[in-house]
Length: 570
Image (cartoon, rainbow, N blue to C red):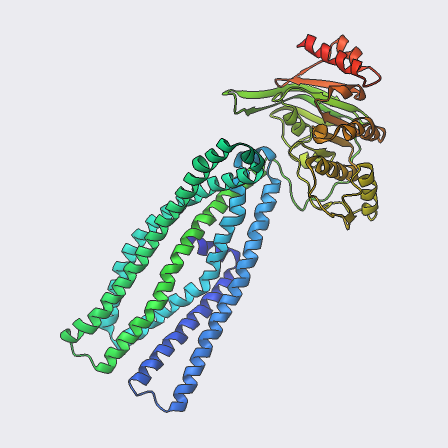
């Protein structure tokens, strides 16, 4: 609760003060209503018109201050939620890719959705919580006015109840923290469901194991933790009610035996005490929501700190100016290395040292077996991974953390795990739609997709067709360096031929540097160079490889000769 209030005060101290003032006035109006009800019951309230007028003024004041407090804080809560999400999105985009991969998409999604939603829900409860506290305070003062001894007894009961309530709440808080950890695991299962649904449908045993060994225990653990937390809160809340009923019983049955109590005063004690039970329930019920929000806020702040510390290593500001088109003459990789842990190997896989150079108007194929490090090298070339050692130079100038994002603007890429946006974001050419329609025809998609105001009419296409739209986006970016990671793997034979024999040579003619990760040895003759990567090392081609590579056609004899040369070298 304290952590949440500190967060709100840091965001808007003035707004919080206004809300608390309005809530305090609302509580005073409530106390006034209680006093007036008691006065009427005791038949000493004065003329009827004064009573009616006073009651109306108190009721209107109570409602107006409550509406003001809730309305102002509702707007603040929604704006604060939007700001939280924007801040997290900006930090996520600014963090190095390798760091995001270690954090994991499930944790990011859980924070952006569930955690922020829990904080919002708690913020919306603050006005009602403050009003109920004010009612309890004002009602207590009025009860003290009626009888100081009754007030002292009530305070003692509340103190004992608060202590036990605190113990129960602390237990509930621990369960909520554990439940939040289970929620991260739950999001991982949800991601597996949405991204692996085809594999689950094709394999009955896998489907059963996914459900019984993954979803069932995780959802069960998540539910058990939440149930345990809620039971703590329920027991705590009903414990307070028990104390209140005990207090009412003492006032009704014990107090008259200890001292004389006027019947009208007794009515006032009982009415006031019973009236305060509702606000007390509201306060105690709100504490469980605030506990969830505190856990969520801790997760948000923890992720924010993690992202902030990672951002320092690779600054990618969302509001950084778009650099002017850079002249590109030569890209060099000088002794670069990168290591990472592979699931199938207890040791770290080391890529490099790699020494390569690329020039405009050059078409390079990057080949190698699965796990050889091709995709990692692609991310190093494009600046998505910083090298652990070595140097990347553009036109003789080293790429550093300070200029790495500017360096990335040289590239257009379609990765194997590409994402296709529904519109051409970041492209503002007035003739964009016309250019896009021309490319759609060239990519044989004109009959399926239309472009209007930079937005695709549909992206519900086959994987191969979606890759063509990603290629279209890359074409429109018109950058000096293009990289394609297994782009042709999802294409039919006809369009695969179009890609290698028409589209790639066209990019080369336009003076683009092009790197293609591929296994299609039938088309190696198209490339100016073929770079072979094996277990993280670059292997030069032999003289026989060069002869095969220089074949001027992609006939079966050429493909066979290349395959034989590869087999001999292996």
